[in-house]
Length: 170
Image 1 (cartoon, one colour):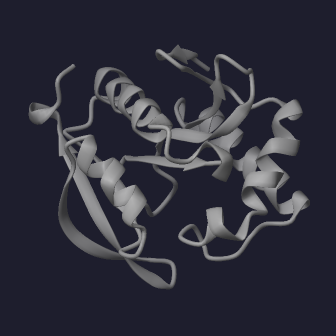
Image 2 (tube, rainbow, N blue to C red):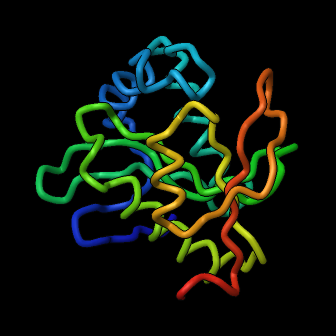
């Protein structure tokens, strides 16, 4: 699994030692409000983390654990993924609440989009965002993504933001 460093962040593979921080993030009702709507138990967070690792194993890419370089803290998950039945290659982001509002999602998502266009060679990368999640919509817009449609995802409609390869500065 490749590792990417940005100015302030390290995108790396998940480790068992990430479970405490990951479970705290997934157990936070506010963090999970737009991602399934319900917080996860510690055991569910572990299974979710294992699914992310499995995505890497099966497809050769996936979500990274995001680490703040200055502190070494695991602060979230960000990267490219496309589980079975997904409407396209997605760059998704989720951060622990204590790290919101610092520009970390935009910084890591940009690095993930670069990685996706350089290594996975899609014509387009999408982000699926709940219409009520204004903070994630702002991240997508800062990245240059535009809403192209809505689509059903599980039990709700989501906005599909897209960035086309020809509009991305590699």
